[in-house]
Amino acid sequence: MFVGVHERQLDEKGRLALPAAYRTFVGDSCYLVFGDDRCVDVLARDEFERVARDIMDQVRRGEATRNRQRAFAHSATLVSLDKQGRITIGDELRSYAHLDPGSRVIVSGNLDRAELWSADLYDRVAASGRGEMAGGQE
Image 1 (cartoon, rainbow, N blue to C red):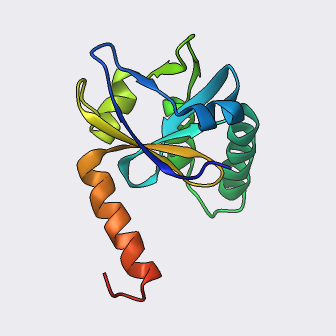
Image 2: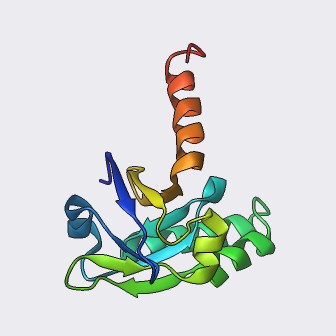
Image 3: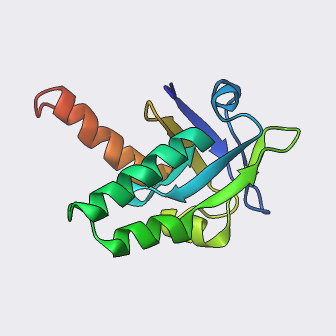
């Protein structure tokens, strides 16, 4: 499972080093997709396939739109980890999540996936989650 929070910096070529603990879950490659709340989801191949099947089933049942399915499919990028454990995040994904070269990026575990966040947005989302955990007492 993906757990914990790690701070990284996006280099000028759009590369980011995944934490060593996460690399064991993704192996040599993984999928990057638009995530909820303007993050980039990092999915192991088998998890990507499971999520894709779930979205297709939701569309068939009328619980999700084909546009959501399209957005998921269009954003999906299979990336390989280089020898330093870095992945390259494409322009469209970086733009979606407001990840600028040279900026701080938060790599956060979300159990079945890792999430890549702009530091400012992550701070707000994390504070909201802590508030919910504390019964609205953040």
